[in-house]
Image (cartoon, rainbow, N blue to C red; front, side):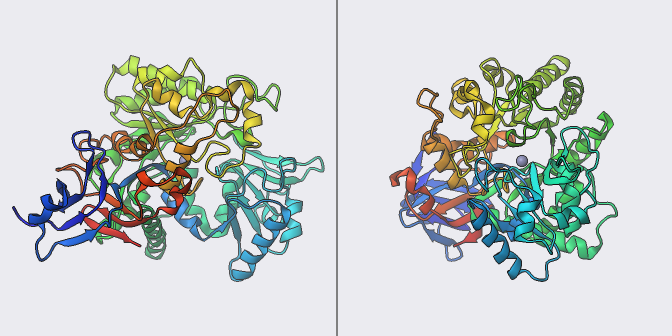
Length: 554
Ligand SMILES: [Zn+2]
C-alpha cells in the first residue's frame, strides 16, 4: 500500500462513525482518509515523506462544520471594537476611548457585540450617551445580532439621517419627541448607509442587497476584499473549522473564493448561497441556479437560497403569532407575505435549490414551514433539506412539522439568553413566560425527530465551536419547570460534524472520520471526554487539517 501523506497517531479519536466510534490514529492520502485504527494499524502507512502528528493522547475530532456564519462580515469585524461582555456606561466609555486613541487615523469607528442592555437593564442607549463618550468622530456600535445599531450625533449627521428618513417595512430610524433621531437604528436599511460611509459597505453587500458590487471592484479593491476573506478563513481554521455554510452571498464572494482557491489558499471548504431579498422577483432565482451550476466542488459550492423572514426579538422585529409580552398589540412585521414566500419557496424548490430562512419568532417559523409545505404539495416530495435558521420561538403545533416535512432546524447553542454570554434581558421578558417552554427548543425538536445542526452565526456570537458545544451541554433553563434542552457531549459534537455534513448533502464524505471520507480533522489540546463541561473552554484546537493539509497549527 502506498504511504500516507499525513498520519495523526496516539490520539483519542472520536470518529462519529458508528461502525468504529473510537480509534487512536487516522491516515490521509490525496486528501482522503485511508485508514482509521490503532496506532499500529497505520504503522505501515508511514513513509519518509509522511507528515506524522502526535496527538499526545488528546481528542481528535472530525473537522468542525460551521453551518451558519458570515465570512465577509465576520472577517471585517475582527478589527472592530469588541464589546461582547462589556457592562455599564463607565466600562463602555473606557473601551471606546481606548479604541479611538489607538486608531487616530480611522475616520469612522465601529464597535460590535454591544448587547441591548449594555448600559443597564432599564436604560436604552441613545446618541446622547455616545456623544458624552465621543462627539468629535463618527461612532456607531452594533448589537451582537446585527439587527440594531446605535450611532452618535456626528455619525447620524454625516449619514444625513439626524432628522429621520422613511424606510421599508421592518426597518426604522427611531425618532425622539424633539423630531430628531434618538440614535437607535433598527435593521439594515437604517444602519447600512453608515457602514457604507465607514468604507465597509461592500463587506455587507451580499447581506444588505443580495446583489453584486456596482461598479465592479477594481483590481485593488478585489485584492483588499480577498485579503479580508483570507483573514476570515484563517480565523475559521484556527477554531478547528474545516467547512462552513455561509449565510449571505453573491457571485462576487464566489469569485473571490475561487481566486483564493486557484492560488492554493482556500483552507476551509465553503458553501455560498444566493441571497434572495423581498424586492426581487421569481426570475431572480435564475441567478441562484446559475451559481449552483457553476460552483459544485468539494472546496467551493453554491446551491442554496438564503432568505430573511423576520428580524430579532430584542428589537421587536421578530414576527410572533401573538403580541409581544412587553408591547401590547404588536406582533412584528414579516419581510415576506405568506403568499409571496410560498411562491418563492415553490420556485426555488422546483429548481432543485436548497432553501435556508432566518425565522426567529413563532409567526415567522410557521410561515416558513407553511411555504415549505406548499412547495412539497406543488413539486412533490424530494430530498430537499430545506432549513429554518434560529427557531428561537415556536409552538407545540409546529415542532413535529420539522420532522414531518424533512426540514432541518439550524440552531446556535450560544444564542439562548443566559447560555453563551448573552444576557437574559430584555429577551426573556419580550418572549413572555408562556412561550418559554417552546423557546430555543433544541432537545424538544431533536426528540420530535428533527435534524438539528449547530453553528455560531459569527460574528453574531464568537465562532468557536467548543464554546458552542459547552453552551449546548451546559444550557440552563430560565425556570425550574421548563423542559431540559441540554444535549450530551456526543450529541453536541454530532450537531457540529455529522449534521453539518447532512445539511449540505455531504454526509457520505464528511462529518465522520472513516476511510474514503475527506481528510478533515482537528486535534485538540486535551481529552474532551475527560474534561468537566465548565472547563471545555480551556481546550483549544492544536492542529487543524483540511483535505490532508495542515491549515492551522497552534
Ligand atoms: Zn446569520
